[in-house]
Image (cartoon, rainbow, N blue to C red; front, side, top):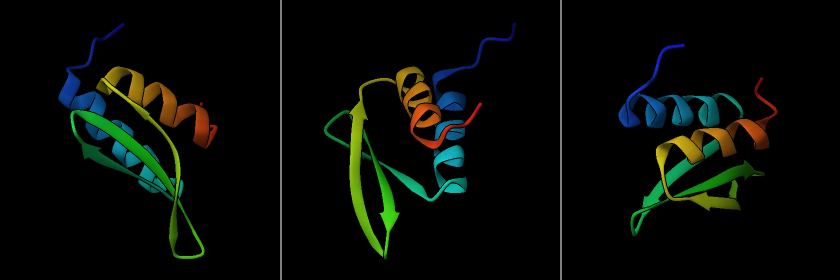
Length: 64
């Protein structure tokens, strides 16, 4: 299995989020995940590392 760098994991998490109507914001060393609903962002949660961010984005978007 190929290991991905943190930058690759971050880019992939942001792309998955974008594809499923969400967005990722970086604030204070954390990655915040929002879903865009009726033109407004709705906070879903935050994670501290790109690896856990990708896992979280996959859970909230039901990405395999």
